Image (tube, rainbow, N blue to C red; front, side):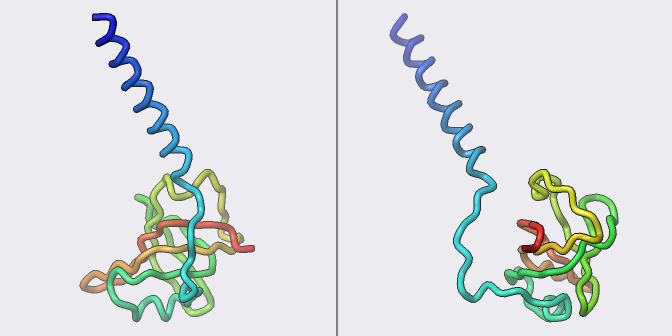
Length: 121
């Protein structure tokens, strides 16, 4: 009986430590392919559904329900930024940011589903 309890305790400990390791590595950087380049809102509007995009501009307005207006020199586009994608950053409309994500084309509109947002260097 003691062996079963010990084995259960070891398995539980292993699961806890491995889940903590995964959580710590969730928001680390990764490889950016050479073709990854910043495009404009105007260009994003013409891209295929689920195309990868990288945009540089400003979050100009909160629209509610994790939806925001993103603006660059060529126009505006609605972006969806999940609460956990902010990574603790506080960003104002004056801050220039880079967002990466995928184009989400609907029947009448185009949005960007944001995977990552960061302050521009």
